[in-house]
Length: 358
View 1 (cartoon, one colour):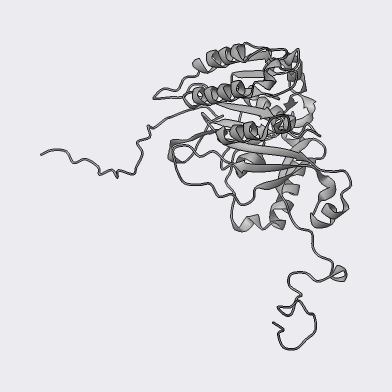
View 2 (cartoon, helix red, strand yellow; view 1 turned 60 degrees about the vertical axis):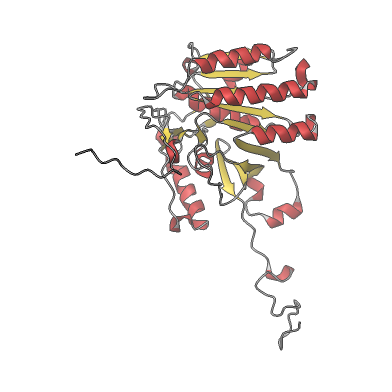
């Protein structure tokens, strides 16, 4: 008697089973694998972190370097987990940037007791306890885990980036992107995806890709071709590529094309020091240093669109040390300052009692 075969729908994608003992990887839906962004709140917002094999684009703010907060945590997370890293920037000595990377707290007592209490209050205030949140194994110590909390005032120990797993490339005064493309191709070639166990994953971080210090900054079609090729190479590798760029220095058409090619698209924006109108509108405005917008979240191996609870989040430094993302919350309306949404008694907005005035 012939063995019966399981019936498979024609709409089901055949995704091979990939196993991994790497604590820096997390399984997602439809065979997707995630690596941490280095920010616990951002991992929760994106549903697990950055998808393996994806291209993440971050639009910079010309008035503040908030994109460097995201880039530092992303790089530190990989170095703590001993993942290969390729960093490229327009500075003459990119290795000096490694000295500014944040470090995990030396002991759990440095952060866990205070932050956990504050986070409980924040979650309760937002009624998150009724929905439940996934556990992303956040670790505030120096142990290897999926996601760490990083102390921005404490530099990362040198032994994390003194080995052979870190490559730094300067793109300052580069006439073209050929050399950088060769570096990326060689780096991703060592992390090619195959059927079976994932032994290692890598990270590529490119800062200020369209910086005026680079002589190729006026060749927009050349930059678009490079990003398209980089995305193709990343898709067939066990790596994640994060590229930051200033959209204000590009033409609108080139900026839109770069945004379209991104699997995950983020943008950061500074907040004015004293904006009285915004301070009245938002709760905790005095603690904000910027805003993070999620324009697009990557979803590989599926055509189901991503629906996020919110797309704009406030960037805060808790105790001036730890990076935290929070949903924007409207401040309560003072009864003496006018009517709120619930005080209007009629369709015409009149506060007088009586029949409805249409």
